[in-house]
Length: 603
Image (cartoon, rainbow, N blue to C red; front, side, top):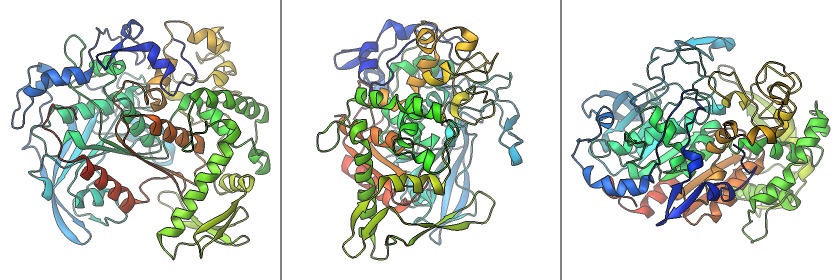
């Protein structure tokens, strides 16, 4: 079903939803039988979660474990089913209760025992095939054993939008430094720590299909939130204080989870996996909005990410300068689509000016300056090398020794004595970014099938039906797919992208929409009120434009009360490098919000 290319959530969703009494009403277009995940799900008209929660909230009081719905009853939390482990945080021993591998859905999707991602690119064997991708490990520090008001630190771990098998971020006997470990810092603060697994791309189902196609990751994350809300009366921590943390694809998942709270568009997917709070009629009786988002380098807005990437690295000839332009015709054509896309978003800078392609480079330059000056002001020891000096950058893959390389500073002139940046040469800055980490291929995010490419690791396999290996999800890649027989593109369907997406039976554009926070920020969805977003100044994995657009959209959303966005100085594509700062921000927004209301009550 065809959607506008870019809407900042307003154009697309105002057509799909109306408002009745201040709440969204889902249109008939969204009540059709859906087959995106490969299994048909018949849905009835959903009621807004916030409305249903208000009506049913009284039934979920503290100390009560009674659930009227049999499926919800099967998801009841067992407060006695824990193992006590001991860790050390900043040299101090701490007992932690580990609630192991809680399956947060009633109808989990079975996975094959052999999954990709083993050593050397091989496979790995997973022990929990029944619910290993729809479970969470919950760790409760001793200071929170009886605390039902403390925040829940909700960690998602799917880098690159890959499926995330259940992991244990807290292990017996481990020592944590709260200044460098977000796990240790969360435990020290007395927060409940939840490691949340989810389906996504790369997952092989027990039946050989790919059950992690979009929006599976979002549906699973929402289901985990719903589990916490269902059991809020008996679990430590408050489901009204969920703080979602993630990096890269996890940052993207954190962002869409935070942006799309209580949207009825996900109800069919939630019903299919037996999520808590979806009744027999397909209506929602629980909420899945969250309190805060702590996202690093979020790979979001995938439907437009190629445009933003190619524009950024072609407008000043960065690809040519660094010798990283293997497909110049494709790069130029994709980059040419960016200005119209950015204009349609209608975003504005803090000074009130519209954010467009014409002022984008200057906007990024100002953010880089702000980042550098913030860094210098933090500590007198934090300095920027003079022009002609060198940046010493350490890198290294998992299992290998770190290596340090020197890069001449030819792009930023800073006065360390006054903590001021005197100038930034944007052409040389982007060349620096592309030199210390080689640029992605063209297209950067939807390359499979284009120019005969069948081996790229781009996000193309996140889309399409579960029975198909991949499907192009952007206009350019669809129209330029030339791999015969892959079921994607004009060559196999005889239809251009516009023709294909105009068909009511088409779902790939729905998939793109349902993982894009930009389509929900500023709409009637219950977007999280608090956001902490970081993107490294050396991150070449995603265009800086993507996180910057998200920030400007959040700033314009009246539901959002606190946005702390910044390009993190001299950081690559990574996350949780600023643990004290991020945890201080979390503590601040929690403190400002006051004591959470009782379960079932909407703040």
